[in-house]
Length: 317
Image (tube, rainbow, N blue to C red; front, top):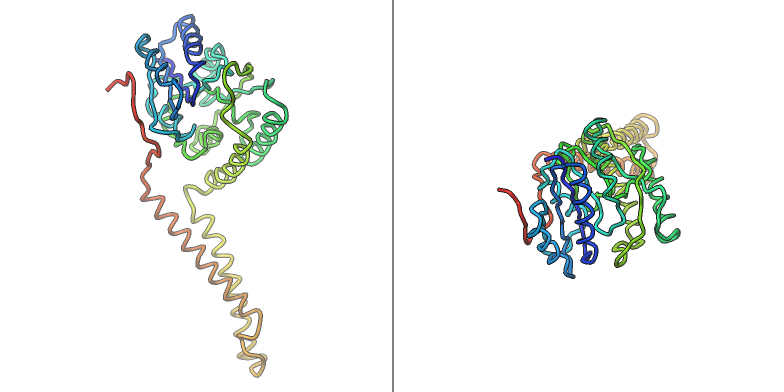
């Protein structure tokens, strides 16, 4: 199979028929062997009914339905697990992503050897204050923090080599940082393509300003995990060693001063250096323990999918 098109969605009943027709037209005109995976993230409208109709008419359509709304990251994770194509393309279901971009994205992965190609909505049709300006600030911070040189981390239209999606875990709300996760996993060839952005045709956006706040918090998390996620002792152990060294130096100074220099002076408990030494050594020990626990958890952790699938359509056993 050439292509798997993974589409996470929430309450996009009105756009699904048109989106399916548009994708199928592009796939047939380019001669692709393909599948379309609709991931219904707990929709409360008639989205799943539309997906069932499409699957009955078109054997290339497959569907996954979550028991409730678990989030876009979990929807992508489920889609990646089910995808069979050698190139996996993700896109949103709101018709703002143009399926006609897919053939060029496919070629960039297959012919040019990119591990991941991210879309860049250079010209956007969203409100300036509501989405454009926060998105620019968010992307600037993400570039500086992650050292991945992309203009639009949050673009839903992306293409991946199959090895990428099968070797990364998208959990929490980390869908914004899949390029960072991919680079951290060793997939270094990450490209970017300017893509056409279209105004929303039906309904309204499911994301508010709070997504940018969560995005910045996730950025801090992913930056830490990308550097120390597989070796927590390198972070906690380093700080623990520094604090223990500082505490030992203060304790040594107090001991020499009390025994040899000023034995008749103040009690050790009356000197601020005593509490500095005690605090530093306690904190240092705690950092070491945190590092050891992190290493133990990392070695014993088994990945668990934090979503519940209610129904699956057209899955091959």
